[in-house]
Picture 1 (cartoon, rainbow over the protein chains, first blue to last red):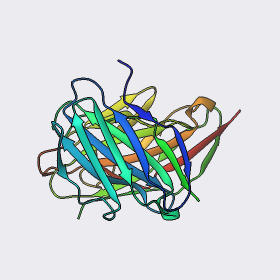
Picture 2 (cartoon, rainbow over the protein chains, first blue to last red):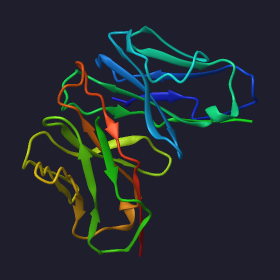
Picture 3 (tube, each protein chain N blue to C red):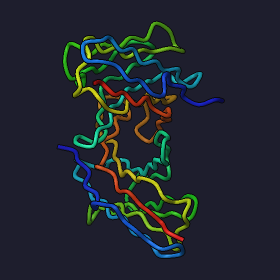
Length: 115
Length: 115
């Protein structure tokens, strides 16, 4: 399997622009997670999906952030409008089951820079 | 609440030196414990895990033992290599996590190994 795929790997945009990050989970994995990594706050869970349904979005920082999972093989995280404080590395991860011992498989991340 | 505390980095070692990265946690009951590693420019990947007290996780020469009495999960390796240079994250999944393996990460410890 190719693992979790994210695109783009790097994104540079100007404040106020819309940004869309994409993720393809590992086939057969029922859970998908979006994380944000910054120096100040470390790794934060933003939202997770189970069978394409958003279950917990309590980590989404504000209404400018939205996430969708239209099918089992694709998810997007959108920021509109973007702000410089959104600059971070965004990771997508997936896992096959909900067991507390299960491994999460991470993608390579998208490094977002908002100027 | 649930939290993970790691020793601050960076940790700088010479090749073949002994490595210890301290990790302590706060959680109710018996969480599952993990070490993830992030190599430069990549996503996180599972290094090892332990799911109950006194379990020892091991992989690639790294070991960590789940110590309930000291709420610790310290990472050790007897002889580090330059290729071990990375950021290491200690993490836990609470015993009662609402039906999914919600990972709570420490801040990460950067390891730099020199020849």
